[in-house]
Each structure stands twice: as C-alpha cells, then as structure tokens.
Length: 382
Length: 257
Image (cartoon, rainbow over all chains, first blue to last red; front, side, top):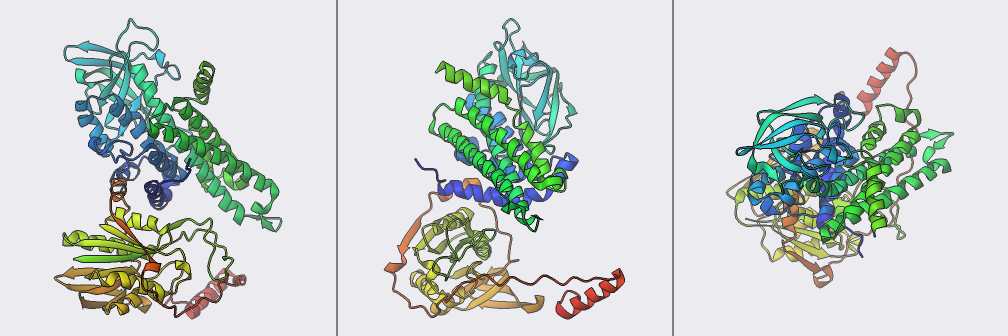
C-alpha cells in the first residue's frame, strides 16, 4: 500500500495550486459578492491547462489521467474558489462522464470531444420541483414525433445553467411506467428552439457558479440525442452521480483545507493576552480536531478515487467520501470562523465565504441523508 | 540548435524553516519543494527558443537528490525534450564550484549552443553556478537577462543593471545566460503535456561517477537573522507627520527621487 502521489499527480497538484493561488484567488471574494461567473477565468483557462477532460482518454479529447488527478484538481481549485471547483466537477462528472459511459461513438465524437477539450461547457439536469432526492418524481416528458423527441417541462437548480452549451436532461419517455422506470436521458444543446432559461437562483454560497432553471416548451431534439438505453435514464443518472460524488467530495475537501489554512495563518498572527492565539490550548484543540477530520476525509476521498481507477465498485465508498468530506467542510469552516472571532463574521476574511460555500456540499448531488441511505442499504445488504 | 537549461529544486519559500542538526543548512524534513523561480524563467526561455528554432534538442539538467527528479519532470512537461539528473543526495553540502564542476563534466561532451540557468537559487542565492559553468566550459556568459532574441547565431539580450537601467548586449553563440525576473511569464505545464512527459527520457548519473572537484567555499554556520527592532512610530499632527515621513523617505529610500 502506497499513500504517496506519483510524479504526474504531484505535478498536476502543484500546477493547479499555482494557477488557483495566482489567478483564481485574487477575484474569488469579488466574484462571490457580485454573483458573477467569469467564464474566461473559471472555465476557458482550465481548458488551456488541459483540465476540462482530465479522466477521459486522448481519443475522446481528454488527457488520459486518473480519477485521483481529477480529485486533486477539484480540491486545489476549491481551496481558493469553491465555485470554480463545482463548475469543473459538474462539467466533467455530470455532463461529460455520462457521454463517456453511455454515449454512442457518434455521440462521443459530437458531444464529448468538445466538452473534454473545453470548447463547450456541460451541465446536468435531473432535479425538478417535485423530483429532488426522489428522481422517480420526474415529470418532464419526452414523446416521439417522427424523427424527433419533444420535451416539455422544467428543470431546476442546474449548475452551469445558462452558460453551458451541452445539457444532459432527464425526462419521462414512458408515461405508463411508474416511479423511476420509464425515464430516459437526453442530450440537449443550448439554442434549440423551445429550450429557454428561467430564473437565476440567489444562493447562500458558491455564488459565482450560476444555478438556473431550464424550461422546455415543445423542444424538439433529434432521436439520436437519446443517451443510453430508452427507459434507463434512472440508471444513467445514478451511475453518473456515483462519479459526481467523488467530485463534490473533492470540492468539500478543498473548502475544508482552504478554511483550515486561513484559520492557521490568522491564529499565528492574532495576539490576545500578549501572545498569538495559536499558542492557546483551546485553539490548538480546535486545530487538532480540524486536522484529524481533514486527514480522515482525504483518505476516504482518495480511496474512492483509487477504487474508480482500479475498476472496482465505488458507489458505497464515494457516498462515504462525499458524506464525510462535506460534513468535515462545514465543521472545519465553522471552526475557522470561530477562530477568527468577530473578524470571521465579516466578508473581509475568506472564511465567511468558505462557510457559506461548504454548506451546499451536504446538499447537492445527494443530500447527507441520501448518502446515509446508500451506505446503510449497502451495509445491511452485505 | 542544442540547448541546455540547468535547474534546481528549492523549498517553497512559504515553508517554515528550521536549521538542520549540522548547523550549516536548513532541515529538509517537512518542506514543500518546487522549481526555483529563476529557473522557471530559464526553462520558459529555453522552450521558446526550442520552439522557434524548430529543430535540435532541449536538455534539462538538475544536480540534486532523488526528489530533484520532480523539478526535471516539470521542465519536461513545460517542453524540454529529455532530462539529465546528476544524482547527489549531498548536493546541499556542495559549494558552487563543485556543482558547476559536475555540470561541466557532463556538458563538455554535449557541445551545447546555448545554456540557460536561473540568475540564482532561492535558497543558497550564491548566483555563481551559471558563471562558473561558463568559465569551466570557456563560454561567454551574460547575467541577469530580462530580454532575449536570437537570429542566425547572434543573440541580443537586455541585462538588468542597478537602479533600473538596462544594457543591451550582443553575443555570438555558443554562450551562457542567467535569467532574471521579467524575462518572460513561465507557462503552466498543461495536463496533457504532464502525461506525455512521463514517456520522455531522464538519464540519471551519480555525481560520484564524475571526476571529483574540490570545494573552494565552506559554510561555517547558518542562522536566522536577529529580530529587528520595532519600527519607527511617528506621532503628532497629520501635516507634521506627513512632512517627517517625506523627509525620511527622501533620506533613506529612492522612492521619491
């Protein structure tokens, strides 16, 4: 067993860290304040660095790197800007990966290649007002009409919504089927007649990542845009989310470390009672718990990535990684604010933003409750 | 065109340094390592020259312990063609003459047209290895370059002088150049290039297999600087404080000149 990164992984981490600190960090607070997605910085630059298709083979426009490299990338981005972390995670795990896993060669050529190369941005649309954790509640409909599918309905909470060119959309293609049966996945391009955007959500955190509603009103797409087997959309979504959890776990791990580092810097400089507060046992115990939780989260997240690389099942492990890392992010960011005292409550210090950013990781791509259901179910089933 | 770029791996300057038990260098444990900043400019300039010349070869060389291989990998991912690792676990104990000597032993046989080095390393900071290497190879050397252009064997560089002045120097190849901040903006190694660099050749040569060179300089002791006194606090009416501040700035600095 070897816990060290290989030379390529080390170099990827160093490169992304340099990029994040030099280019993302200076504007992270302002972009959050303005709720502004800076595509040139948050996506186009990632494409230039070859990071938009990390895990896909070169033949698909990717870099042929492993899941651990992907984790390291999202982690480093999220240390300074969780919004950029989720932009990339949603692009790779939720939009490009289902095309890689379920797309036909023609679909991969047409849709995966430009996503992996970063020429296009991707998004994933599963959630609806009545279908959150329960994807079986999907009401958006897809009916065939000649050579087309016709989509009707609304999707909400779509990360990268409005900005993305390629959307993976789930809709009920068989009205007779119940619950999670009869749902199919579709590829929908921005600009297709009948496909428009609703409101941009005003969020607690990850405010520089756009979250929009998608509206389908007699939106006609070619029959060839069905992704995966008809009626198997639920399976496509669940397989996609298995990988997505690793990305969000990495994002949470990054947020936790960003908050930890900020708190440590502050505690070493801030003096009270004539000495740096970092020298007080009360503060050191906080750091001990934070460091412990981060290290445990890192091992779970890297292990899930390692299993994905080794071709082993990783659904349960990615659920554990996502659950633990997201709860760690919230706890660590919360303590980081506490260590900052009154200053931690101000927007002048990054921990305030990090605490707000951390909270979503316990909710999206499967709430903590759903992760516990997945883990508990797998444990009991044996 | 055959190009050599010499690089060094140094600790991240954000690290928390401790003096090693030997008392003559810092402790290497618990440090994060990276490519020396000035060497990044050297690598970038070398890659640009390699790309512009189209043919030839760019070799990256580092003398150092096992982990220096990481710095070589980075230079390969930035565009160097192959690597040479002069393996020396005790490189931190070597003086500039010994390091330049080992590099010269390797480089002599290769007949490089251009050699780039950083102006200095961020840890030792002697700024001598490049110059000594040029001396040992009997090459002209131009230090502290901030601009570089090449045409048909003639190189024109700008050198940084004291007080912000610049000198333009023309030199015929072969020659050695030491690179300063401002020369270029180093590229990030892209992920596909990081993956491709894995397949590039890195030849490892133990420095103990090269002719030995005696040290000319020995480090006696390494110490942190004494704590500086608390700064000067100016008190009084704003206009009066401002006048005194201006006077101090004029007297002790160049910012108002």
